[in-house]
Image 1 (cartoon, one colour):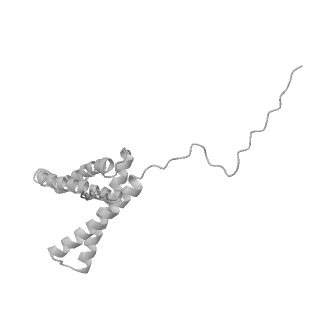
Image 2 (cartoon, rainbow, N blue to C red; image 1 turned 135 degrees about the horizontal axis):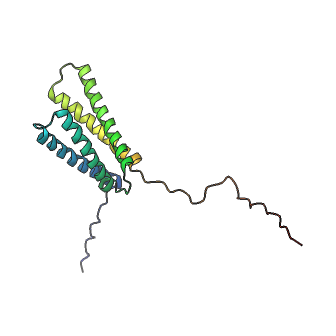
Image 3 (tube, rainbow, N blue to C red; image 1 turned 135 degrees about the vertical axis):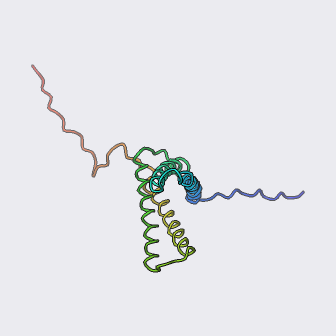
Length: 166
């Protein structure tokens, strides 16, 4: 009789790694769609206006995708969208600062250097945004105890005197 080879065990990835992969896929997909929308709107609407509209719409869509797919959260509402939007503002400020520093250090950087700085800053901002979304925006609500904690044993309420009418 021959012995059977053991069946290969399915390797499971860390939930954190899988959430990050979903974050990249969802965010990247929305980013590509947003870029396409900007191209389509480019001839009809001023760039500043179209960029603002596309940024707001894509942030709302990405927040919904991150809520449902990336973090599998049941939290929703405008508070979540506002917090997520703030992470976008922080990311924008970070990438803009990186480019401003580059131009302060090097007056005329090549397109390759500029793109390297921008994409590197975007990667760092994206990782930071993932952490903020996971730890702050979509963090699971902590369960509150049903009975408030006390410093010591609960003393019984003092007994009321019983008045007997004669």
